[in-house]
Amino acid sequence: MSTAIDQQVETFQEQFKRVRDEVGKVIVGYGEIIDGVIMSLLASGHVLLEGVPGLGKTKLVSTLSDVMRLKFSRIQFTPDLMPADITGTNVVQEDALGEKFLEFQPGPIFSNILLADEVNRATPKTQSALLEAMEERSVTVGKRTHKLDSPFFVLATQNPLEMEGTYPLPEAQLDRFFVKLKVDYPTIDSMHTIMNRTTKIKEPEVNRVLGQGEVLEMRKTVRAVPIARPVQDYAIRITLATHPQPPYAQPLTMKYVRYGSSPRGAQALVIGGKIRALLNNRVHVSCEDIRAVAFGALRHRILLNFEGEAERVDTDTVIKGILENTAEPS
Image (cartoon, rainbow, N blue to C red):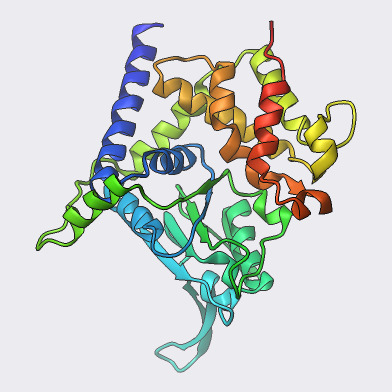
């Protein structure tokens, strides 16, 4: 590597580590989740976090915004939430001469980091208002389109679908999330650390270590990492193997899968692989990088058929089988 590239990689690693360490002061026992959220932000993607209430998902997002000096908003999704509560609305105002006019009052979506809390408790109409903004990076109210700030990063949380009062996100909308991360219960050791940090007079404080401009520069660094054609082909073959149709279908997908991943899954594998390569002091993507990000990138993009649901098959099991049966390039 040249000196300039060396410096870029080193700067990227240092900035990533500073953010991770600061968030880790507050969020205990979820190192992989923290890494996945930061990686998604730097990949210009969005994150879907799944877990029962009370595991620190909200705290994770608010802490990340503090550490990165970014504007943070939170929307608590409920069945009576309306699209205008998210995007904003036109309000009738009156000028000094008594003339009435419409003025746009922006909603909480106009932020850098948006926490969409319990997104599957809102109706599909309200969910779609958020998810369209995620894709377009803009909001249309009336006849005017309003651009969202950059970076714009959504972290949506959802409860497991078997809980009461939830509306499953449609497959097309799930596909707009860069990764889906599962938040499990902390270990006993982590619980002790949480108790020690949160039951005393003073809770941990975080330092602001990154700004908006630095986040955008890190995103550029990620996109600049090259990927060899055989490694990209490996990512594509893994994605195609999630489909139950020949010629790429594998035994598990033919038996249990109704629909597989869209091309966005392959994009997530490649971009996630680039970030992992940088964190491992490389400027080329390996097949191991692709495998390491495969579960988060693909688990929400695989739709099980009736047999898969009846046998309670986990999409992670399907992905594991695909990785085991997809040969690396020679």
